[in-house]
Length: 267
Image 1 (cartoon, rainbow, N blue to C red):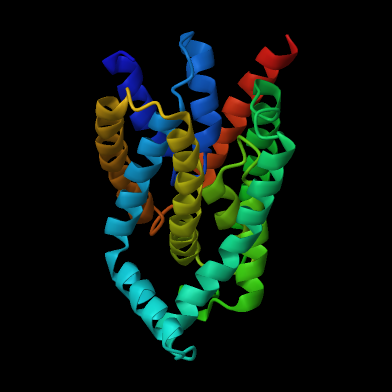
Image 2 (tube, rainbow, N blue to C red):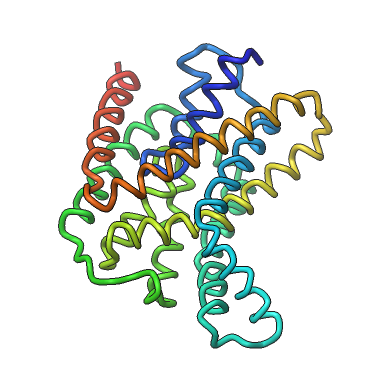
């Protein structure tokens, strides 16, 4: 793979992973519009590792709480705030793992990776995000996250397996509809991404090991580093902007891109 393709792959994954505009949708479109071969499993794993590292570094305080929560849960101290956070994140991840395994076993993951599906999901879920952000109350904080909200946000996250939906977008939409503030809803969405990206990376890594193709190892390291840097920058910028702006700019982008893709798909 040439450096330009590698750079675009890492930047697109890094920038769009945590913005509510769908990283998977953009990665599906990249080889199609540049007329290049699909990046392959090794590089998919690499960019996932890069973005995972970025969110873990940005929310390092929460990561310490989650690590402590794991220790508390293992030792039977389930009532601590740290254990509660760890258990809620684990609970919220169950729907997407089950849905992902079912779709993979049914061979439906590749069937949905087309411009028509991405165009519709970009458009529809962009509008849904606008409605939730425009009319959702801002009364809840992340510390008040409960089992019901974790389940609903977890179910929403499972919908993001459809390309173009956006994992961060649909979970932020759910959080806003449930009454979480913009920054707190985004924070919960980002924390939910950690076990989800980890699970996705493990599944992709398993496929890489089974394929036994390690020829892209050097390129994978470069992709991971570039994805890490771009994801950290995008995440920092979005969290800063949410203190003073809404999600409307992302909605406009989604709707615009969705319309363009649908025109292409049906022309």
